[in-house]
Image 1: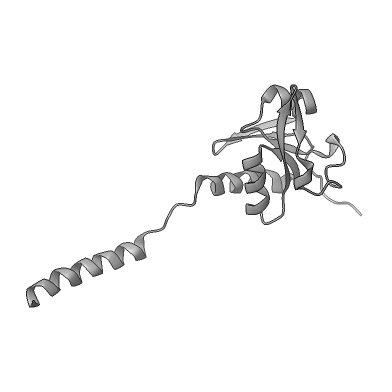
Image 2 (image 1 turned 180 degrees about the horizontal axis):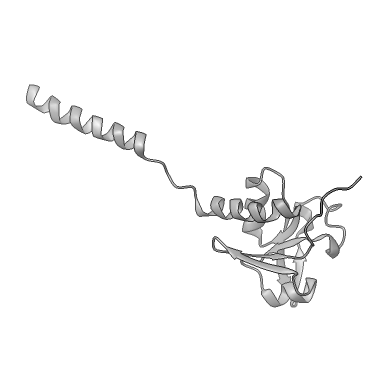
Length: 139
């Protein structure tokens, strides 16, 4: 019995060391949200559209700093699901500042919103910017 305890203790110590050293990678979606937020925050952009999955994840994982309505392509144009967001924020198509294009038809995006001012690609997503960056506040 004494000879069996030593391998068990060694295995336990190795397991404990692995737990201490092991740092799980954040899920890819979280990394994408961080990237999107890093692109939008300096521009002062907070209102956008995305497909259903990205919209929910962006809204939740941004801690509420982004208001993203889910959208689908209907008859070649984007149709937001406004029942899932504050309708006052999305009162007109002109309020849309950005579109996370993943999962959405690029032609439908252009048909609804026109050509974006800028297209940013990174971390596996394509972010279409429709609003100019917010300038410094003046008194």
